[in-house]
Amino acid sequence: MRGEAIPIEVVLRELNVSPPDMSGVRSEAEFVARWEVWLSEDVKRAYRARMLELHPDKHEDKSPEEQQALLRRTQQVNHYHDLLCAFDPRKALPRRPAVQVVRVMHYYSASGAASCTSGATTGSGAHVHIRWQPC
Image (cartoon, rainbow, N blue to C red; front, side, top):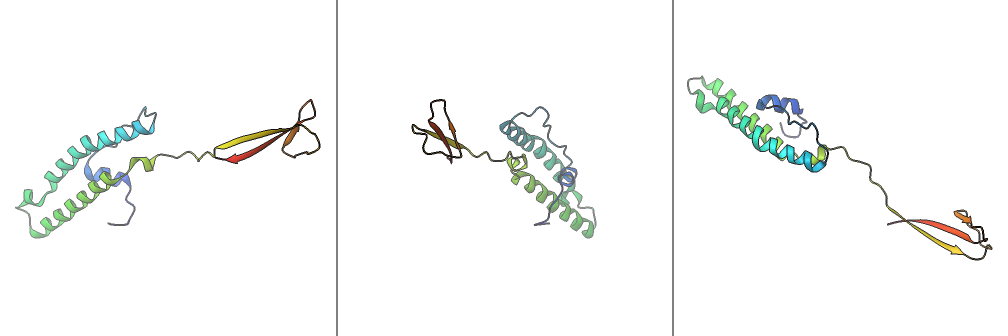
């Protein structure tokens, strides 16, 4: 179980819980807030109900093999619940590419003697030099 990718549909089905309602979410903060409410209310309720349903102590009349199978299922449900609780919803959000901020530096040269490929000539013959510098 450790180290393998588990589809979220499997986790939700095993816990008997529906995914969170994310309709109308407009910001990352709202997304995270809804995720935390869903986790603390719906998942917690579903997890407790599922553990009561599967716990081996509730099935003392079953054979030892069936009790072992139930024990494995409860361990799996515990693992899935831990995965959901440890999941950081911010990592699931699509990221915009990083924007490089630049500072535009310009200066005027009164003499038209020095020309620059990134410069432009003003009407009075002075050159405007523009240099892009990362901030």
